[in-house]
Amino acid sequence: MITLHGRRKLEAWHIRFYLGMVPVFYFPYFYQNLEANKDPFDIKFGHNDHMGWYVYLKYFLFLNPLEGLVTQGYVGYDFREKIGPGFSTDMSYSLWDRGSGNVKSSYFEDRKIDKRRWSLAYSHEQRFGDRTRAGIRVNSSSDSALNRDFLSIEEVDMFRHEYSASFSTFQGRHSLGATVSDIQQLDTETKKYFTASRVLPSATYSMTSMQLIPFLYYNHAMMLNRTYNRQGDHYSDAGTLGPRLTLNSPKLPVVAVSGNAGLNVSWKKENEKDEGWGDVVNSLNTSENLRISILPSNHLDAVFTHSYAKQLNKFDGDGITGNNLNARLNGGYGTFNFSASTNYNLLAKRETLLNGSDLDRFSLLGFNANFSHNYYYLSASGSYGMPANQIKNLTFNFRVSDPGQGKLWSIGAYTSFINNLLDFRGHPQSGVEDSTTFGTTIGFNFWEDFNISMTRSYDMQQKILTSHAYNIRWHIHCWEAALSWSKNNSNAEQIFFSIYLSAAPQFKFDKPASPTAPVFDTLLNTMVNP
Image (cartoon, rainbow, N blue to C red; front, side, top):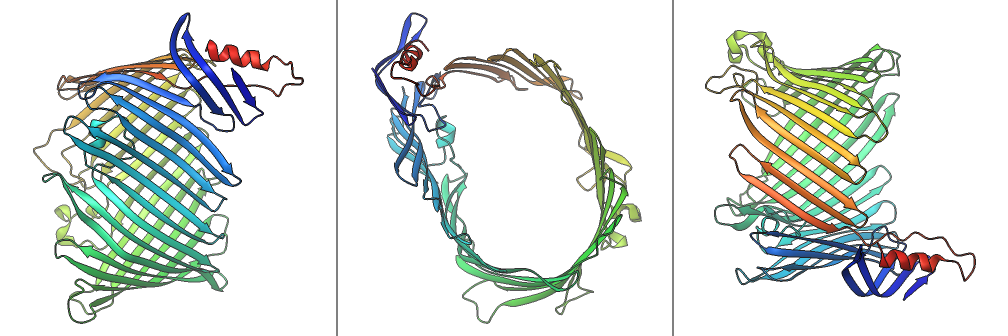
């Protein structure tokens, strides 16, 4: 029996699912909200050594009990042969366009270790008008091994738990924000969590740019921060104040010039128990930017940026803490794009340069180029060390696919070279061999719902196959099956097989023109014979 409530929902009783002539599932009652974007059921089952046979059942809900209050998500029941049953939820809600949130949770009793295990991830944001909002976030679990032991547990960070609340408002040119948080980090040796970061509170205030005269703007920002120091078991206080001037040149056809200068005042008291007011450091920060359009329409642009920083307090030496010049070249035409960039360190002293060469002031020269088309793609990227006159790393990627409408096949290949005779700065080093990897991927879409893919990776230096994997996916209406097999360079095999009831059949209907329209017969046939 099926009852259709307009375009809002559908109810049915004593529903049987068949594969051909074989009955597979029976549901005494079935409900589907036709306003939701999710089908009501998601069923997954499989087997592994840790849990034995498992079945994950999710039932999706869409509730709109009051005008402006909308709730949707799922409630889940999980059966695990060796561990026992469990329960899970993932619900999102919105409150009259002013508030929204999400809660994910799981709970079960683990028979293997006789322990109750759970996880909770909750977030909420509340808006007070268009300019003011507040939020809260909680992410916690009973132990650190949930996402390792259970495939159905999502959004669990095994390394940290988080509890935080925030508030922000914006009025005119002024904005104000505050945050309190407590983050617990996992100690991998003791398997216990410790306080890694605690902010009570962090407050920020800023003013957006205000024009003083044509092309000259002013803004400032301030921050106060109180954090917990775990090593000393005390709180540290810090604050910054940063007024800044920005200059933008008039719009020119080929050249654009901009720059800014700011004073940064930093205050810090390392231990709240110490006497006095702490330490204050003043510094001057400036930067200048020059953009040159070498070819029109962004076909070739050059960007030069100079940044400078100097400490103004009493110090030993000249107080300059940064003096760098960065150069970038960008360009492209049609399906071809490229970029290159490097940094020149004016602060480096000659006695610290490699062999006294000024080329050592340059960072690694990074570059990237690619061709893209609707059925092929080619890219190259890498970095070059100028002092040693050697390439540090180089990667090529290539992909081509069937140009036909069906996209029957696709083939990809990549090769990656890393020169370990250079360190990350481009300086020569010894004792480490180079590495060169070559990999391929091939995929076939025999039809829309059935595809096969294969990936292989080969170490060209050691001349060994480091990994290879094969994947098959097959989708038949509301059923989906996936099979994957892989092996790494230590000959460890991994096999994964899963069958999904991805959704109950999608109900599509038109509003009947008369009470005798055949829509109900169509729905009944769809339910009984998916």
